[in-house]
Image 1 (spheres, rainbow, N blue to C red):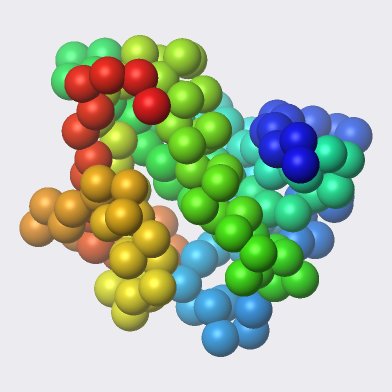
Image 2: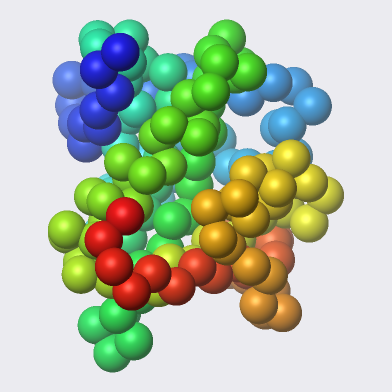
Length: 154
């Protein structure tokens, strides 16, 4: 398997926007179309497609770097319902964090998730994320904030 990420462009945005989580997960994350539009309009995040060779299997959005505290946000992350349960989430996360570290030089990563999304919380905790007591209510899906500190490259 050759996992890699590609920035969303005019060539792949429709395919990325068409990815879907399982129906029971819809309340946990904004649509990819909304997220892509957010990065295009606000210009502070980056939307990427997650590929296994040439097969698009997921989507992520990251950005909002803060040089003052060496941090950035891992804001959205999803694997298409057809590819869930195949280990893609666990294999893509290090690749995304490496990309974020290279791009922003960050040592602290933040994310927010729906408080009922316990499967995602367990996944993030397995990478070292911990709830920090904050709430993110800036978007259409309010969530609890998790953070992970890294002092060395991932």
